[in-house]
Image 1 (cartoon, rainbow, N blue to C red):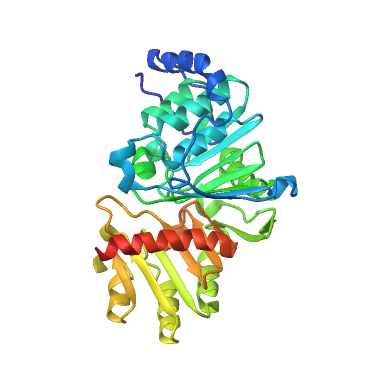
Image 2 (cartoon, rainbow, N blue to C red; image 1 turned 180 degrees about the horizontal axis):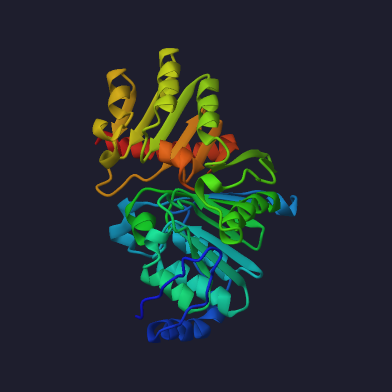
Length: 377
C-alpha cells in the first residue's frame, strides 16, 4: 500500500491519494453495506456482553446505557469475533448523520470497514488520532477512502478513545481501537445515549479537529459538566483543562466504606496518599495493578500500598490489564482514558466520566472481582 503523509500544517486535513488495496476495500464495502446495516448484524450472548436497557419511552436523550468488557480468557474458543469492537462497529453501521472518532490508536478492521461504509453512504466521518500511530495501515485506509484524519503533531499523547454517533450517542472507556486491546488486554467500553453528553464530547472533538488545540492549549469549555442520563448523574471531565486529579482525590476522600480500583498505570502520589489515608481510617481499599507498570522505579504506588498492608495485587493477564477504574462505596464509578499519572493530568488529551449509579457500579465491581480472582491465582 502506498504510504500516506498527513500534512503537519495547522488545521490541514487533506483528502489523500488512494491505493489499489484501499480501492478493493471500498469496492467490497459498497457490496456489503446493505446486509451489514441490518439490525442484529452482530449478535452476542449475555455472557459476552453486560448491558442495561432503560425504558424506551424515556426521554430520547437518555434512553440507553451499556457496559462491555473484553474477555481475553475466551479468545481461544471464540477467536476475533465477539469483542466489544463488534458492538461499536454495529452502531457505526447504523449511523445516519455523523461519526466523530478520537482514537489514540486504531487497527481494528471491523471499525475501519464500518467507518468507510458510513462515509460511502454519505455519513460525515471525521477522525483525530495520535500522530505516533498515523502510519497504521487501517488509518491510512480511512484517509485513502476520503475520510479526513488529523494527527496531534506533538510530544504529548492524544490519548482519547471515544466515538460520537449522530450527536446522540457516546462510546468511551479504556479500550484503544486495536486488536490487542479488544481481544488480548482487559478493557472496558461504555455506551451512553444522551444529547447533552454527545455535545460535551463533540465540543472536545472539535477543539482538536476544528480548532487544532491539543493538550495544555485546550480550553475549558465543556458545555454540560453535569449530565443527567435517566437516573444516573454523570460528571464529565477532560484533561489537561478540567483538573481531573483534584476531583479524583475529592471522591476518594469522600468514601465512607470502600474503594476498589483497576490501574494500568498509577504513579500519582497525591491520589495514592488519599487512598492510604482512607485505608488508615478503616475503609476497604483494594485493587489490581498492571504488572508491567508496577515497578517502584517507574514511580508506581504498588509497593507503597503493599508496605502499608493494602489488599493490592499484580494482574494475572499475560498481556495487559489496561483498565483505569475506581469504584467508590459501590455507588460511584470513575472510567475513561485517564491513567492515574502526572502525564494524564498535565500533558495528554484524556477524558473521564464519574457515574453516580449503583447499577453501573455493580457491573464494574463484577469486573474488578474477576481481575482480583485472576491476580490471586
